[in-house]
Image (cartoon, rainbow, N blue to C red; front, side, top):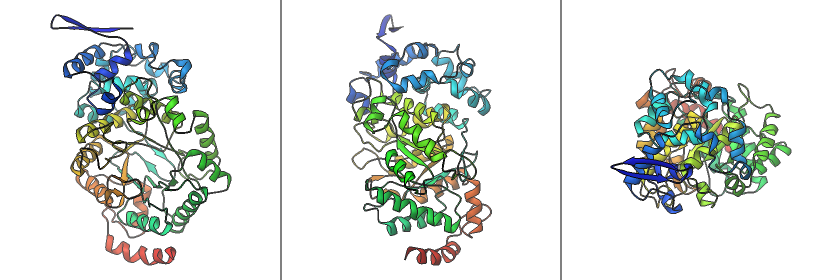
Length: 462
């Protein structure tokens, strides 16, 4: 179906909904690389004007990728909650934006509506929003998940402690873990990206982190971010797996490029649930996404990269994850060219994920060949913290020496918490207090903590 808009006495036509969404997207290098971006700002504004008039119900009738060709499309349509959609079903995309920003649309209303919103609807309305709109609407969304602690509560900001090492050296990883814990990081997860595909190495890291967690009774979860099939093998061998990790995308072809299908993820979730390792909840999945992954795999099916990203959230939502994070600037400037594009993409991803009912975090990051720097990351971190992001990354020195990109540091999390009055997950915060590592107000007591924790840790590291 074609979509037309008349402006200044001329009629402009977009051949279908897929084209309209791509042309309405804020400028980014990935869509230009794919040849689907607006040719200029005039065309972009016209596309937004036309998109604002599209009824939300149209997204249920005109599918961007054919139902019979793509299992992500089938998942979106087959699991759509028509009853939840009824509250907004008579709105256009433009009216949906106004509804989201209306003070009367509160947290409870958004939670009731989440299962009735498709990723394409979320992506569409985000294209009409300024950055402040994305922040305001996302801040009203609250998604709480649980495993060994409670994440996503109001007034809280959690951190994934990311102690990666270029050779998977256990002592090096353990040293970074200790540093992060002394800065009060790790309540979201202690998660390591393994440098090796070796199952032996994966199990060794799982055993090490679990041993530390048990010895010090840390109320958090651990994860080795190996491929889902490696994690399944580790479970079969009796390894202490808390969370199952997998990178996912918004098309069947993208997920195939990652070596997974929906059935694989279902098998892994069932295996992790059968271990019964959670103490306060059973959210056992951890997903990572990022704009540009579908395009980089030549699997975007002509869909713009931001809409593809939102479709990945339908996959994540189906498996009730503990954590989801967009690794926003990781793929490089071919997809998000500079700090402005990275900031915009991070806010879009967080908004769309939260709107769909996901526990969204963000790896606030960039590669060294992008036109971005840590000042840009400070800006995005602050905006996301205001918007209610569930968690961010804690990387030693903000420099991941294994993945070779720039992220956020342990100190950055302290900054965000201090300036906005945010606290850690309650169970983790109580543990820091018991260990003498923080005051009752959540303030770190580093010297006392070092005296208490480090001697025992040195013995453990031998």
